[in-house]
Amino acid sequence: MPLLEVSHLKKSYGGKVVVDDLAFSVDQGEIFGLLGPNGAGKSTAMMMIAGLHLPDAGEIRIDGEPGGVMPPSRKHVLGLVPQELAIYPDLSGRENLEFFGEIYGLRSARLQERVNHVLDQIELNEHAGRPVRTFSGGMKRRLNFGAGLLHEPQLVILDEPTVGVDPQSRSHLLKSVRRLADSGVAVIFATHYMEEAQELCDRVAIIDHGRMLKCGPPQELLDAAHANVHLRVHAEPDHLGDALRGVAEVETTGDHEFLVTVKRDGREQPQAFDKRLAGVFERLAANRAELESIETRERNLEQLFLDLTGRSLRE
Image 1 (cartoon, one colour):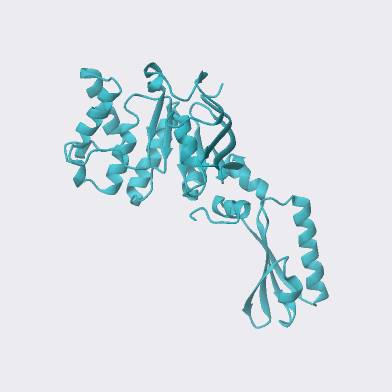
Image 2 (cartoon, rainbow, N blue to C red):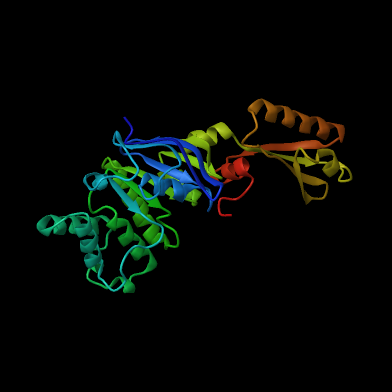
């Protein structure tokens, strides 16, 4: 049974639909990526799962129990790491963790045991006594992450955990997330960094305007989407662009040399693309273009998102 089940979740603000019929599940030990630009509905969905916002419709179940506003006895099940830093700059790293640990009911020896474990987990032992205001941005991110792990949650929600951090801290954080999942914790990983999601997540959901467009293992999504086709041709330049307008992009690469790109639309059926590609070959032949090479270039999640939505993930 999945640790988290989200069914037909909906949320509107002022008549604007922010989350629209969202449904997915997350298993124990799985890293589930929520991918989408700002305003896609990721943060609202996570706030509803965390019980900070109530859905207008739909159901959330965590470990078989209804989600939403949970009683204190159930709050240990979930850990939330927000995008905004939720740590105190004048306290030391250790003092911050002790403070948040006490909020979760940890005391005395158990509190110190968990603080020491988390400091080791986020690799900040050597800096634990320093005021947080002296930390680098990446160190603050790691401490922010650690504060959400003190109570040993079964489900951890990470909202853009690596935004604005240096490469070393990003590597630390991603390794920590992987270790967390390997220990059996379910992880929701919201990001707009596609390379991270492609490398780290077991499954991803691509979301835009509150709706889920695709969901599955990253490589399966890419395999199903296939790749764009690039044709290098030798032709007279006069009419080639006009002949292929609307079906392919034409770029001049040299004297009578052209690169013709036939792009796949993520919403297009394979048979429709094959028909369109055949039409490109017919038009090339009609214009006496000589085909010199055919190349397919593998796509990544960023390109897949662009195909599905018509906009960049960072817009």
